Image (tube, rainbow, N blue to C red; front, top):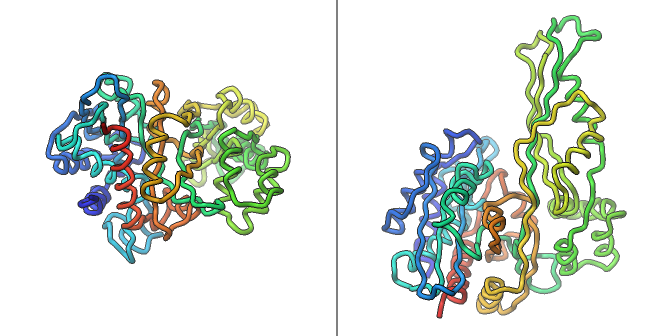
Length: 439
């Protein structure tokens, strides 16, 4: 039964737990209250900063030797520019069978689905064999430092698990020759970075040969934009491509570092969204996203800062990233300030949780075709993987949204998910819990 999952999703969206990266944002306490009412139990609340609450329920299993499972959804969402939406991004309206709202696919759909599937265990209506841990985490959208990161560091005794389920829930892979369910088995790293330059202030009316900090930074950013990004073909990407229903030459090119860029250019002609995803999983990506400088229009700036989102592939460490930045910027006047230093994390397949997912998909979809894939984004799952846990993200969608279309909705306008997809994902979790936690 998936009763209540859509009203719960709507309420989570309407709670407006918008995380802009500052400690005082997020307000995840609103969704903690919603979930406490939904479960009918207070649970444990972890609050490292006022309002930044994470809710935890740990259900002790009947067999101490059985593997335990952590469910790790988050409740915060990214900011939104409402002018780009056709509906109110926090009204959670249902239009043509879709729930619209910020967080609909990132990841309040999964949060609601996991809560509905876990509630019988939390309330004692079902008894798990191994422990079941439900963690509604705060602050995921800003790195998890006021959420899962701090929780795992300070209360591992409460949230420890050998396996975990988190995001992302992907639609079926439309490029596959047969019905295929993507399972996120890992994610790229995250090296968010600030770049700083300094100069000498002066009057903007006489800029000739001045020491303009913004000019230095813009020049360095130009080098980053124009320099080709390093390529690496991870084994997970090669396996993913092997499942695609593409001609042999295209598949070969997508796994050849010497020609993959040409293959992506060709793919972008027909499917730019999927090409963007494929590029991210074959390259170190560097995206300068914020630029600040100066104090007034007629004052030459003496300081400038750019915030850069850097996502390395497995095996690309901080030294590799900084070396590439230095070469691309071609300047020794840029100060590199690391903000995040998160390594890529990957989980193996062929274990009890993988088999539980496969068995559940077979029951619901009539096949066991799972394809492991890496995520371009970061998730809270990395905190459990670093502790040795195996972590996946999986869901079931209806055919009203393609893999590529779903990718475009993350942090985008008119974020939405179909009612049927949320219900199907809930049913999938119920079956996975039955196989993994049942007798």
